[in-house]
Length: 130
Image 1 (cartoon, rainbow, N blue to C red):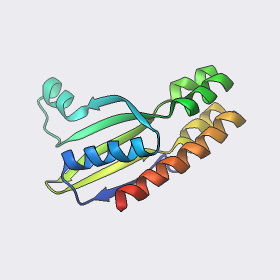
Image 2 (cartoon, rainbow, N blue to C red):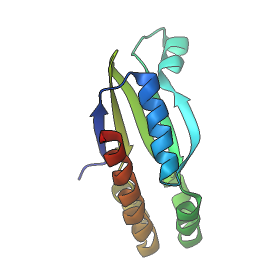
Image 3 (cartoon, one colour):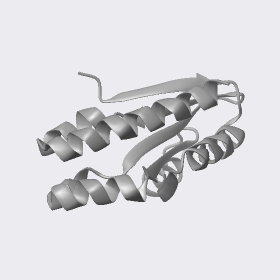
């Protein structure tokens, strides 16, 4: 069972990150966290890995349904999105599969939300391809 799906696009990292955020917003998803992994690794380890960010994407109404049904399932939220530089002009965007992750909650309501969230994220993938 795969835990992620994604797309590679022909945009430099900064432009891809901007497009991703706009496409998430178009699907009513907000970015609630932004971890600059590349900066952390450079600062803490002196390692250069190229641009690499982890965004926490959230649809508050979906998150509320999961938390109402299974409060501890909040540990499985938000949906992580990895944006990583492949070259100066190409970027990979990988999405955590909410169906795989929320299956850990073993809860029908969480599973329904996961299916809905996956559909939303798949629409974002299609927007990124277009």
